[in-house]
Length: 63
Image (tube, rainbow, N blue to C red; front, side, top):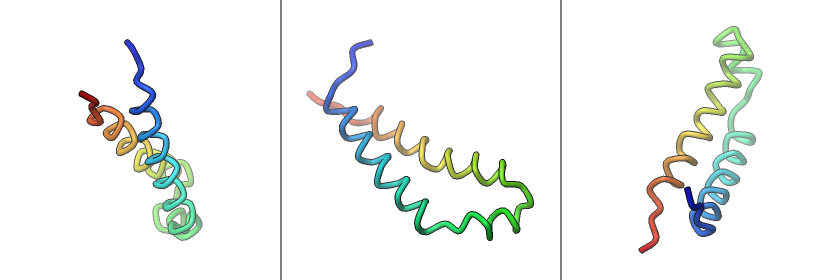
């Protein structure tokens, strides 16, 4: 599989922006208190970061 530098750049920028948004906006302690598990909160937040990042990587096509 040949990786395209442009796709990697777009997905990296999206990942950094989305991760910064989640890191500053989401209060981990409040979510952990609500759901009762730090692991559940951590996994769900990482999925919220990784799934859109992979989607941008997959759907960014250069012709």
